[in-house]
Amino acid sequence: MLQPNAVSTDLRPMHHLTQELLVDYASGALTEASATLVASHLVLCPACRRELAGIEALGGALLDEAPPAALSAQAFDAVMRKLDEPAATEPPTGADIPGLPRPLARHVGKPIEALAWRRMLPGLLYFPLPLQGAAKSYLLRIKPGRAMPRHSHGGNEMTLVLRGSYTDRLGEFRPGDVAIVDAAIDHRPVAGHDGDCICLAVTEAPLVLTGPVGRLFRPFVRF
Image 1 (cartoon, helix red, strand yellow):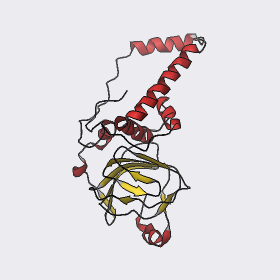
Image 2 (cartoon, helix red, strand yellow):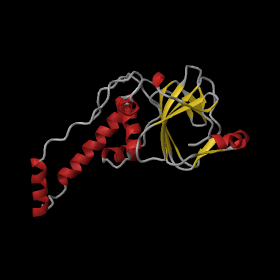
Image 3 (tube, one colour):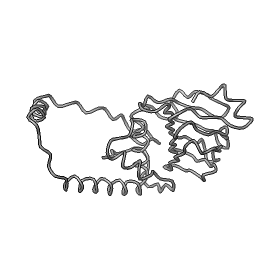
Image 4 (tube, helix red, strand yellow):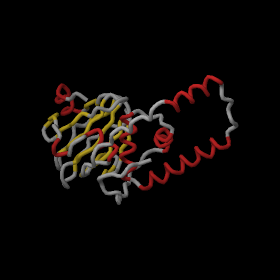
């Protein structure tokens, strides 16, 4: 299911996907934005790959035990028409890009250093991604030791660390780790000193800046 990638698969992330997300991914229920983040984490996380394999095996067993459904004449005709159609061209997957899992690299298209990063705040850059199904999908680049403004969330947010690290009230997050937060979480991520912290973030709603500094910068933050 997962394609070869241009990043090390020897990572052992400490923060993982929920079983609910893995079930939704296996069933194809996730949006493109969320599925890309989940697939990227799976490239980096052996534990979640094993759990996904178990979920898919269980789903296959349940299908095998389900009673066969009657096939209507219309459905049979539709299948036969499909067989007569020319085979669809496989969508391009994009070249390997160092530091990016291939499920994400195919949407980014360039090395991280070559992207047209946009400045949001001092020490904080972002790059929007053309992914469907979420209010915002973007890469974040936080300079070493810099802190994001304290914020909460108008909806759910998933963040996958690709390079570097950050810490917040939930712990330390390193490459391959995924953070899943909701509107109840108010935090202030601080990048580690081991180089730029680069993350993939998928948010259902704009961030809500909190605290005196957050309110000061609120007019300048657009996601």
